[in-house]
Amino acid sequence: MRRLFAGLALLALVACGDLPQPFRGNPGGMAGRLVVPPPYRLVVPPPEAAMLTATESEAFAKAVAAALLKREVPAVADAPLPLDWRLAMDMRLEGNRVVPRYALFDPDGAPQGVAEGSAIPARDWARPSADLFAEVANDASRRAADLLLRAEAARKSTNPAALASAGPPRLYLLPVRGAPGDGNDSLTARMRDSLGDYGILAQDVADGAGFAADGRVNVVPTRPRMQRVEILWIISRRDGQELGRVLQMNEIPAGLLDRHWGDVAFAAAAEAAGGVQRVIENAGGMPKREGATGQGAQPNAAAGGLALPPRAAALPTPGAAP
Figure 1: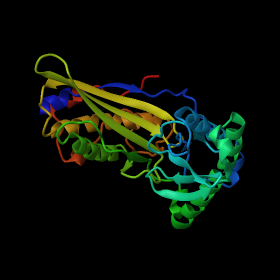
Figure 2: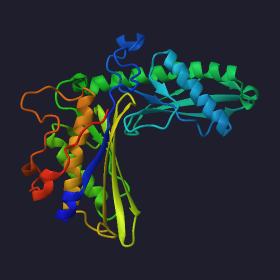
Figure 3: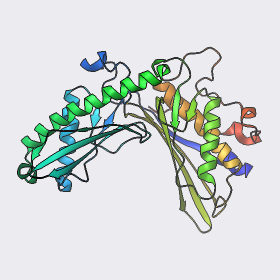
Figure 4: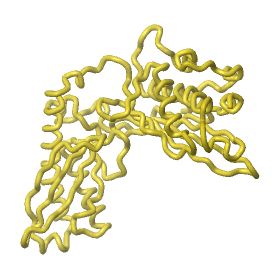
């Protein structure tokens, strides 16, 4: 196991400094009211219960996201990332009218408020036009912005520390997916410990986190009685920007990790945590503290309670490719 651990090398790290960063340094007119808004990005998925076709639902979601952008609320009609807030929409028929309902959810899936929109004539909604979508979307954006303001006020009243910016970067560590055996639990636990060695506070909820890491494992057969293990860590920021990816892979005898990962999970996490730290540092998310773990430094092996194998020093140091 330890030899395998030593051979599980970090292959790639993508962290570009010139990625588009909407709203960074330009919070817009709502900044006075949304000083530290709970959502840095609001996702508007196509509604499934709106009495619309799939194409119409997608068009309506895009119209609502565009209307929210006009109100300077960062919003997209896209698949949500781990730290995104979500605006769910549905429609119910009341006589000859259709009444919209909008529900706001935080990144942990907790409801933050519900609002009803202005009623729409049922005959118009049965054959919606682009103009009708724009009109309803403008009303929806107003209701959603009000929900966001109320959610922020509630958060401030119950968590004054949410406004504090000091301290280590907080990272929402999602449970690892796709690993055989006990790999999902082992990798998640070992990654949480290893990130602490780099001065990053890993947590299992999205609230208060400025970054997120999503770990995915894929095992594919290669040659006879051999398989390749691929571990991908995707690091994103609260505004919905993907900051970088850390990829690890190694070829092993088939079935070797079908039960226990042991030292392999420790090795993979210790190696990948340095790559995650580099991505966050390149994004300006690491505090400048004297004596802190620096760029490219290795974590303290003793902190994990397991000595590094002799070949660990030969592993490539996590790096960033422009």
